Length: 353
Ligand code: PMP
Image (cartoon, rainbow, N blue to C red; front, side, top):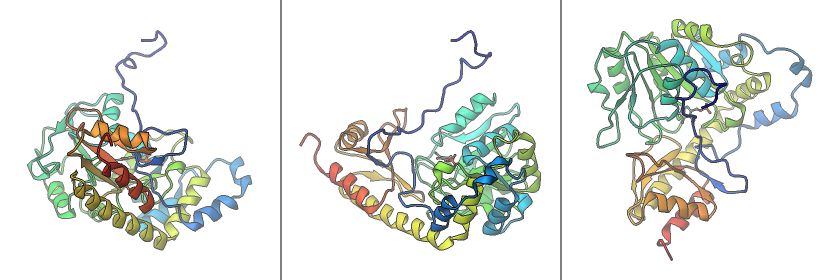
């Protein structure tokens, strides 16, 4: 406890992200994309007009919002952008869930959600997952809560609900905001974006960090009714957040312009995911079906902690969550074929040999 901290700071627990190694390792622990961003992004960065940096960025980020609106078949006033979807999520938690009733989130999901709840003083109720590691959306109460937030596909499980299930949920949830975090869209899951015109309480968030290989530039967005987007605009602060800096904006637009590159990388990742899934099953792992760029897998011959340590000793980082309910599992990001072969080779050798 520090005497300089404001009341409440002591109770906060900082979010601990996946390890960033200093030395070269095969990094399969933070769900980054193994492929480079679109060629157009490289052109933008090489030829960026430095003089632009003297000026504040366009306060409306309209060029990027228009490009995103075009990509998703919505209007620019239905799009919000921010510095990574983490920032957009933080705004959404502040804008929409500050109620006296608890926010519903899945028991195992993106670990930043409880952090936002702590930061913004939100009560939280965790929804248990069923034996298939899914939230039973059809059993959620229609009222008595302050909103619902979940990732689809979920992390760390990789499970995605079909759009028909999301529609069914939204038909029963007209009163509160439903936030669907689509950080892992692009790898085979159905997006909820086509539902936004029918459901003004639906907010979908997305990111350029995973399927578009731009985690380092911090580009996130939200799509929803203009009513929700206006709510986010009221929350955002000054020039530090939305609008995005001009380099990130230009790179994001260049990425959106190259749909072919996007499709090619996503397909390659899905193919490698399939091979890795099968290889892990051959080694006796239980592997959940995944619609994301990672696999959630549990070893049978050794503990997950031991497999994690063995991989680490061999220069391969995956994610191990030492938490109740998750400690038998590893979350393994899908790298390129060579990286995944190296992972399977390490795991194939019997522990201790
Ligand atoms: N949502 C989920 C479910 C995530 O796993 C992540 C990344 N770890 C994010 C949002 C945030 O991604 P970013 O801030 O890079 O857009």
